[in-house]
Length: 326
Image (cartoon, rainbow, N blue to C red):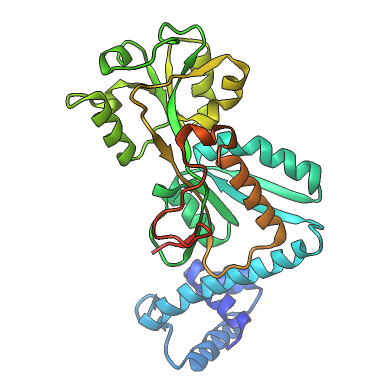
């Protein structure tokens, strides 16, 4: 059994035809058949039920899962080798959720351009399900997403970032700009803009409890978008109220164009985001640096005092904030 035979098996399963697989591999069908038989002999059992449309046997199902993992690890080994030589070059691919996109994109691109110009950095979005699959398939090297969007699977390795506070933000000239409290009836006078994927069930329960037994916060949300900058711009130019990760609006809060609405009693809500890689994967130096930059930015250093939690690892994590899903 060797890596070439595993690759032949993978392509055969993907193409669902000896003829198409042989053509893709630039082999004759007989050579491909011999390779598959040799693999079966090495593993001690059939991988395919040839009399049933080439469906996988139980051993075949196990072998295909392991072979895909080996393919990803081999590709990662090659990529890591190209990145080990003092960040000499190569490509890093990072999947980002909507809020991490808004917070991380510019700082990450600027840092990599200034300090590691030989490395190509590709950022991508998508649904959490799609992004996890891309991570498993080796399409991306890592993810930065909300912790609630990651399944508790043993093959995923999670590094938790510091919790980042949530809150209400409005323009400096808003009618409620001087308010010290916000009741539900007052909130309903203004359109609320929020990211639909940033609001966990836990946060919704806390908001409903804060505003009263008859409140349902989602009813107040009139505008939702995964483009967080668009939501912040809407709030800057209207009487809409933003609810979400304060870090997204921080540049305009610092400039005085937007204000964080301080609530009395305080509504101490926060979100937590994670850096996700495949379990057992050795991260190249450039990816470790990217993780450091993400941690610095996602921690909301300018807002550390706002929530009282500069770093809060979940109770079931190690002391360094690293956790294995599952």
